[in-house]
Length: 168
Image 1 (cartoon, rainbow, N blue to C red):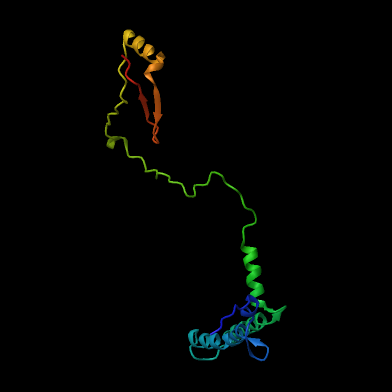
Image 2 (image 1 turned 30 degrees about the horizontal axis):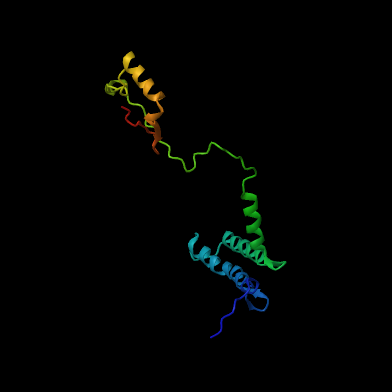
C-alpha cells in the first residue's frame, strides 16, 4: 500500500455540503430553529404565543443569517472572532525584571501576638581558639618553608581544606 504526504492547503479546505454552503454556515442557519423552539417552550407564557418571543427569535435568526455570510473565503463569524481576539489583547506589555515567576519564595506568615512568642536561645557560631604568640610564630615559619608543600582546596559547598606536608 502506498502512502503519500497530503499538503496542508488541501486539508484546510472547508467541505461544501449544500451548493456553496459549508458545514459552519449550515449550523449557523439551523441554530435559530432549535434556539427558537427552546425560547418558545421555556419562557412564559409556556407553550404559547407572545410578541417578545417572536421578536427575540427573529433577532437571533437575523444575527445568525448575517454571521453565515462568506467574505473572502471566510464567514463573518470567523472574522468577528478574529477581531474580538485582537481587541481583547493587552495594549502594552510591561517588562518586569522583578517577576516572581519560577522563584521559590517563602510564604509570609501572619505575626502572632506578643504574649505567644517564646524565647529562643540563639547560639553563635563556634569561634576558633585563639593561638598564642609562640604558636603563631611557628605557623608562620611553617608556611614560609617550601618543603611544607602547603595546599588549599575548596569543595562545592564552600568548605576550605588546608594540606601541609609534615616537616622535620
